[in-house]
Length: 266
Image 1 (tube, rainbow, N blue to C red):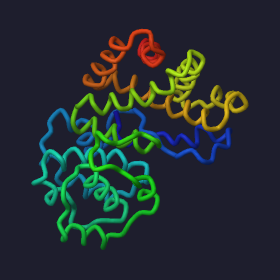
Image 2 (cartoon, rainbow, N blue to C red):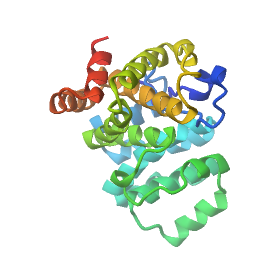
Image 3 (cartoon, rainbow, N blue to C red):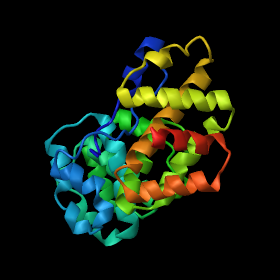
Image 4 (tube, helix red, strand yellow):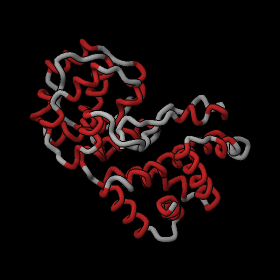
């Protein structure tokens, strides 16, 4: 999986004119194409912080769209929380606004105190307004994050790949299941839209524009994207697969579990 293999959900939904939808959701894609992607995506397999030394510098040297940074915030939040002594060693000497905003979000989620010197460095680098808006209102612990926008899904996927901890995967499952468990018809829509997300095909989703109000349609789109990411990642990451299977076995008869089972089998 390529950590930065994100899909712009707004592009998928452009025919629906849902301009209020956030523009990115973390999605599994092709195998890693760079050492940075590999180090982040599979960090949980060898969780030594020294492996990340210099990785953040590479982010600053190769400009990326803002949607690449929320997963990094989740990864760094785990690393900072578990290895606080490495915070200063991992942060590059030169920071741009996007990386500084991402590091600030990670520190917030890690619950670690921030020294005055580091606060000054982050402030000097500036703030990226788009990321600042996406990171607004983050809690002081990752487990207290309540998913409301696709960026939160990105953060939790990053935390998952940093830790190999199924807790974060379960948070994504619970988010998806809240929508799927509304009814059988909604669960079926999630399965059908998820299949389209995998193909980057908005054809079926476009047919739902006149069937549901905008709020519910957005909810279905988010849930479908989460469901597809869950089952796709389950094929590549053992801890994700274990968590998904456990959820299915522990929630028999629920529409959320059935969505996952159908997509895993497809």
